[in-house]
Length: 270
Image (cartoon, rainbow, N blue to C red; front, top):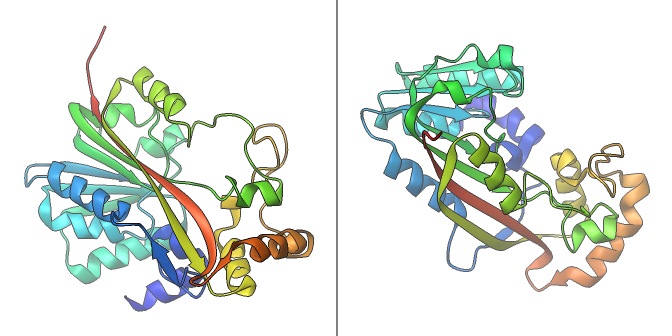
């Protein structure tokens, strides 16, 4: 870990692939680690001739890990501190085939910084979903790898905090997401779903995690009609105490999580 990573780890934690004071003390994947599967897929589809796009590259860990294996790699990230961290990491490692730009992929002007018809492969590691603004950057036969990690609004944590979604949501519901991607000409090769458990030392440790991840516990009953509601220690502590009471195990306080990994290919169709 570089010096500039330490502050970012405390600020962002798992949101940008860091381990921090608020990280779980133990994660049980029950035999198959989704992060290892993403690494395997990226290694499989990336070749020495590939030009790759990292969508939502965060602080650049995966971008720099993949750079020596490909012809060129670009990243786009939202957050000036993350942008600077990625550039420093690239410089520290002496990478000459990697570059990163600042911007929100939902902003067509920001995406204009990326070259057109260039990328053989794109991926989003717990980052933004692919959209119509990014489509012109792909080559006709490009591969797209998407990893989604569940928000904390599902059962049972979301139930107790009153923030469970009451309808399918594009970032988590598979049919909605695949329909969205089909409209962009991206069709599935594989879809994998993982359920796993994270364990926290005590209620203070879990609360620190909820505060750090912030928006991951944000929907307030209906995601599109009411304001986003991150964890509030003053308001939500009674619900947290209730959750801890019923979910404390010999390994710690258990929180159920979910990840989905999609591999899609771009297809030209009429």
